[in-house]
Length: 58
Image 1: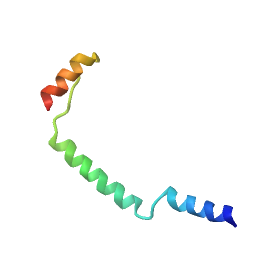
Image 2: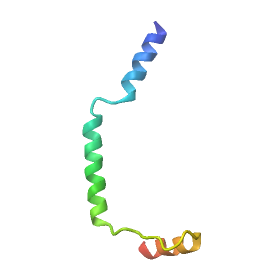
Image 3: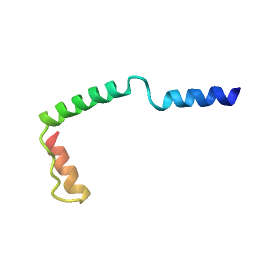
Image 4: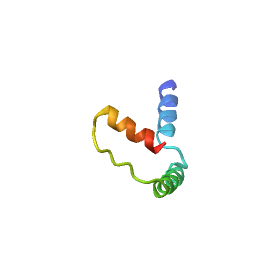
């Protein structure tokens, strides 16, 4: 009995009922943010160079 209860709860929490709707809303928000922010192109993988670029953006 306890195992069945836990199994049922686990299945219910794997994918919420409104998952698709929330996923679409999140995608729209991310698309809007992406549209309004310029792309950050890193010129190097060196930490100092990347940090300098980030500081310049902020």
